[in-house]
Length: 305
Length: 165
Image (cartoon, rainbow over all chains, first blue to last red):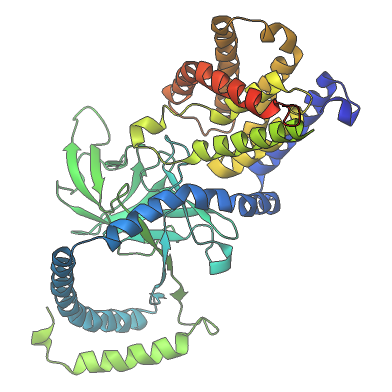
């Protein structure tokens, strides 16, 4: 290889090391290298797919060979769950309309209905100490950096890098991750930091006197603008109030199954301001909300929970 | 000539396999023990067929590894080049080492590899616990004799002239 370029080993190492250093600095400082990364990632997608194949096949095979009883059991369970959820949804529709009407009265911005897309986590490992994963949706599906990822139980993480066919996401438990949350019981705002342990988040910025209890549900507050508000994040598990220290030590258990999830939901949220004309469909949504609101207002108050 | 070509095919296959092993999912604890397969494979090929493999390959494989693992672009490339260089430079000496001595040398190179990664992570404040960098060195040293023996037998098989008989 050395003679092929007409360069001795030493100078060649120097040259290539300089290029590598330049790449690293550019990559660290700005996002100019997206094109290179995109190209490489498309080239490598078959490799990722092949690595994922045995796991996908295993899931497929276990689905295909499931017994009839097991499937019937699952079906019944799902039917029951669906009925349960539909009953809850009936209440939700009325509440949502009411909320929209109240917000409209206050002139506050309103969150449009979230659009979601189901993505599958590719069975490839990134770094074992960084809680990151790859999903099989990318640029082409409209995924963007900073987009929130949920699973059925709560907030899972956010997208940090997008390639044409895949996207890399960081979990809320990564030691570099933090997200704004509120305590669902009383609206207390704070920040939940990842700890590097998938079973634990920490809340380092609450004073000893803060009104927080074990078992409190933390939901996303939407303050950072990244995560949609109101999705469950974690449950407070342990509170240690130390008189000598300014802040209490509080740890919480994530609501999402961080290691169990196979399918995740990518969420698009858009805020609709009152003066925001050309949004996605503010007109339609607004009219619908108004209609719903008047409908909701017409119902007797006794029905509202 | 077929021998030459099949050596190249075997080498490419082993490098693709090494890239796949670098991302194949493992249980959480075992993931930390994953050896640096790409570094090991590249060191083997630089040691045995230096006319084909060198710094250029280290650079390209490093970039691929960076993309696969989501690291800083160029990080693994630099680390791989830094271990490939001594292998190429002292190849003739390394080649006559008995297995134990060779393993010691490879272990030192793996330390250099991990140190480079550690240093770049540190500078860009993406540091991880120190054990994340030590375990791959240890497991890498343990699997190196196997990698080397396996590689040698593959090399012998594929380099055998197929016209002679």
